[in-house]
Each structure stands twice: as C-alpha cells, then as structure tokens.
Length: 440
Ligand code: GAP
Image 1 (cartoon, rainbow, N blue to C red):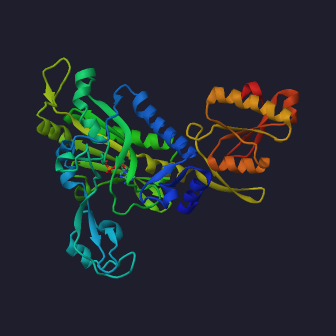
Image 2: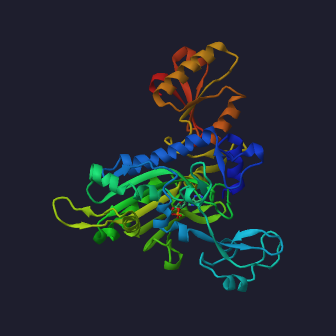
Image 3: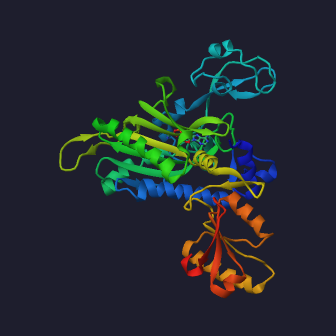
C-alpha cells in the first residue's frame, strides 16, 4: 500500500510539486507545480475538458474573473455562511478546525458538544478549549487605491458563481437547448484553518466545475446520469482504481447550505478516505438569489412554447489537486527488477508527462547521438511531449523514466545504424522489442 511520504518524496525529487515559496521557508497551504507536475496537471485538466465539454453537445465553457462584484457572495450566501468551526487551545493558543480534530462530529458542532468529548489539543495534549466561533474562509482584498469598507472584495472561494453569473449572458447569446451545462476551470481560494495532507486541503486550489441546468421535473434523472458519468470519467479516463472510489450520500445536516441532495465521491488516499469530489443538486437556489439581488429575470423560455421557469441545477465539482493526488495514488506501483526495488507510475499515455524518452545507448559516440537526435525530432514532431535522456547508464535512465511514468523508452544502438531499428522498452512489463523507426 503506497504511503503519503512515498508520493510526497517522489513529487519533490522528480519535480512534480514543491512547497509554495519554498525558497523563503514556504507558505502554508500553497503548492508550486514543477515541470513534470505542470505537465500532468494540464493533461488532467485537458482530459476533463475534452470528456465533459468538447466531446458533448450539451456543454459550453466559460472563464470568469476571479475577483467578482462582492454582491455575488451576498447573493450566494457565502458572506453569511461560508465558515468553519474554529476553536483555540487556551494553553498553547493553537487554532484548529473543531470538526477535524474529533471523530464523528459535524461542522455545526457547538462549544458544549465539543467540550463534552474531552478532545486533547493535537499540539500540547491539554484540554483547555475556548468557545467555538465561525471563521469565514473567504480571502478579503481591497480593489483600487482606497482601503475602506466600500472597496472590499474577495478572491472567489468557488468557480461556480462565475458560471451562475454568466448563465443569462449564455442564454441571451447562444440560447442552448435545455438541459445544458456550463463548465469552468480555474483557481479558487479558501483561508483553510488547517491546510493538510499534502495537496489535499489547500488555501489556493484549482476547481473544475459544471453547472448543469435542467427542467426541475427532471432533476433526479440527470443527477443519476451525471453520477454514472463521473465514475466513468474517474476510472476510464483518469485511471483511478475502482476499489478506492466510494459514494457517500451526504446527510441533510452536513450538506452545503444550497444543496437538497449531495453525493460525495470519496477516494482512499494514502492517509485515509477523503472527499475527492461532490455532486450536488443546487435546485434554483443560485439563479433565484441572482434574480433577487440583480433584479434581472433568470427564467428560461422553452423553445417553441410559452413555458418558462428558472432552471434547476446539478453541480459536479472536483478539485484538480485532489484528482492529481488520486491519479498518483492509483498509478504508484512498486515491484522488483533484477533483485532491486523499482518504483514506477502506471499513467496512461494521455496523462504521462512524457509519452517517449529517447536515448543514445552511449553518449560519447557521436554517430549514436546524431541518429538518436533524428529519432527524437521525428517523435517530437509527431507527439510533442517527448523527452531526451543521455545521463548515467541505461539502467539508471530506465529507473528515472519509470518513476515519472514515461510509457516507452526508445534506445538507439549500433544495430540502429545498420538496420534502422530501435529498442523500445515498456515501462510496465520492462520488456524490450525491436521496432523499425518508421513504425514507431
Ligand atoms: N461549488 C461547490 C463547491 O465548491 P466544495 O465541496 O466546497 O463545493 C468542491 O468543493 C471540490 O473542490 C471538493 O470536492 C474538492 O475536490 C475541491 N476542494 C474544495 N476545497 C478544497 C481545498 N481547500 N483544497 C483542495 N481542494 C479543495
């Protein structure tokens, strides 16, 4: 069973992910993606976009501003309710999310309930808790040169509101048939009390969200369909191990303020089971709020009829970092080759940062190097994401490419100069075959 430390160390060693602002001692809850991490993250996001938007006729994209008019967050309920239960230890003054340091309690826990549990402070071990207070997680900023109440704005805590606020623009411009979905990918910011578990709970994360607008009479049917499609996407496109994926029907008291039904799709991460994504029936909560706050009509007129209503919404929402970690957890494999432990990432060809690695068998033989460059250029033209490696010996190169998930290593040797064939070595089986260059 893969451990979180193995993944963190691989990510650091191979240039996938580093602590944000590492050089200055870090910035809690932020992470920087290095060359390989960016590549994998971008492929995950592109594969999501292809599956959910490009390959479907009922989905459209938007890309809204991160800083939105603050009325957005009053209408959505975030100003009033987007808060976690914060509790402070009277002895060491450590601050914690109450529902995360005691088992089996919900976000709406009261001070009395919490104190009755006799939870010890995770830092100093004492039991000297203060009152639980609600801590709003939105990051506040000021827009323009004046720092007063009238210039307060927020970094968006979810991408969803940038979709809802553009619903009317989309209907007025392209008037899609109902049901239709609007998709968005982008950064979201939450001032989490305790960021933790590597990239699982961050203060700055990326979300991929869809608001799927439906006739209210049909929401259940669409909910089930989207749930099934989520599973297909996670297993067939992302390669997640099905036995690590679990649906959790969220109880009414644990659901977000806007939801009438939520299924969380949880994943068995190395540190335990956690929410990977959510599927929520948001009813017409958001469009009704926008209608009230803006005074603009949010009704949809069914084409060819006089029927009109404010559509209801099903929302699949997933964090890129959580998906990234689930992809790595599923792909991380260990075995033994020639009596030595080997680590490899079993990523699909479409997700692996590099599809091929090209190497000359020996780097001090100019004829091998120039032939290898020819093959490298050929594959790069065809596939783009191909890497070159002439460091160390061939065994070390294979180990390195295995660790970053490169599916095939192509090696140019003396036979290549004779007959235009190369060795292609498979990451998963370590088997090698001879292939003609023009058949690569
Ligand atoms: N628009 C609905 C919404 O934002 P959410 O359950 O708060 O719902 C959706 O967030 C998804 O975004 C989560 O399932 C998770 O994948 C991701 N996410 C939320 N907060 C996160 C955080 N602090 N760090 C990393 N990912 C997060």
